[in-house]
Length: 308
Image (cartoon, rainbow, N blue to C red; front, side, top):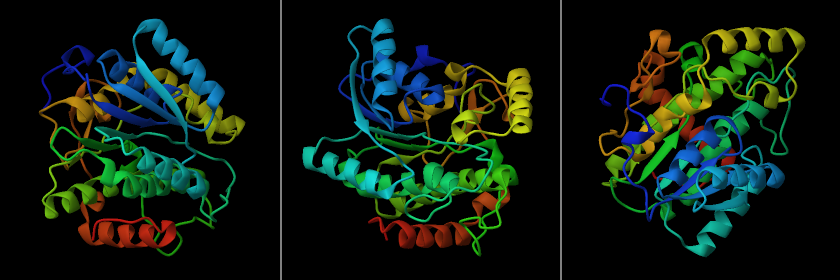
């Protein structure tokens, strides 16, 4: 259990560690990258847009002039991009200490299909991260200080895995988002089980940021006017800052007390906001049979190498 009111001031020094943060150019991804860089980590901003990444790095260096940063292009919605990122990384051979799987979109109003034939929210939020982790796992430094941190959501509570239609051809924007975040949570839990079964000390620790004021709905592809108004009202009234929303991510990524296979998020009412704490995992997300089925299906869809 995190100490009460855990903040970035409680983070251990990250000197000599390397963190890859997907979706690091804005929102909680940027806030996490900023904090990790400030604590001494070398931070790789893995994102789609080079210009936005450059602006993010300038802003981080404004606060931390000595920050060790680099940008690498990555679009988790495209398996070709994931393979290119992972292939280049394997060629470099550098060990990874933190793999923070944060990139995401939400509430895409009309169904969009990626070049791989995947529903866009599932591809961006989950399948790309599943494939990326499988390809990079050999580069994750062995040991309990190494962390794989999938970012899920309180939306998992109402999520359902539609095994008969994972690609949501009968589309509903919110249901598709909930499925993608349920998949991320179940992936994190199943990954930790598989790591332990293989005698690996690496920890997989899923997290969620509560309700946080970010541009995730806008980036979902142009939410309609009703969705935008609803999002503005809900996130404006209940949402916390991106810096606060990033705290569970940072706790999982850095704290010596963070436990593999545990789910962390805010401690406030409904886990909407607050300080890092152990979060509730709804029963359907604990279903190990469904988790194995999801894993097998994800392997087939992405072709990613994985732990058996």
